[in-house]
Image 1 (cartoon, rainbow, N blue to C red):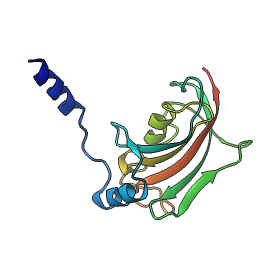
Image 2 (tube, one colour):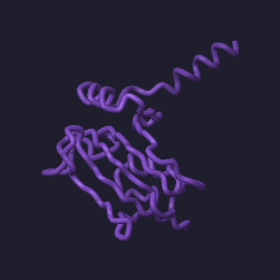
Image 3 (cartoon, rainbow, N blue to C red):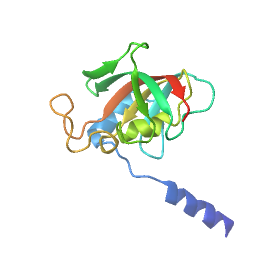
Amino acid sequence: MVFLAVCAAGVVRAQREKLPPEDLAIVESSWPAAKKTNTGIRYIIEREGHGAPPVPGDLVSVTYTGRLLDGVTFDESLDPKHPLVFRVARETVIQGWDFVIQQMKLGERRLVIIPPELAYGTRGQPPRIPRNATLVFVMELVDIKRE
């Protein structure tokens, strides 16, 4: 009986693949060590951070580079004196960022692969981001101001 409950729990947690098949092939060959979350986001921690991760409402500062899977940079903010600043879980950034940032610690740097439905989806953000684009970010959490 316990075995069935454990197996059923595993099935409930299983998620469908959120990357389009052609994107999945690129991601798996380019970043084979990337870990996958239950939201479909993949990531590689490039530098460990420290302390507690931010929670909804915290004001965070992030430096980042955003690229398409073909390597084209569509946006970046690399100056730690002028990072992107936003409140966590207030729908001011793409949904994938809100998920990722709540897992990061201060000073942490991650490579993050976000599926289209957690980014700009079927609308894209023309002309820089096409429809249904899988996005790759290198992001660093440079500051957290607790609410």
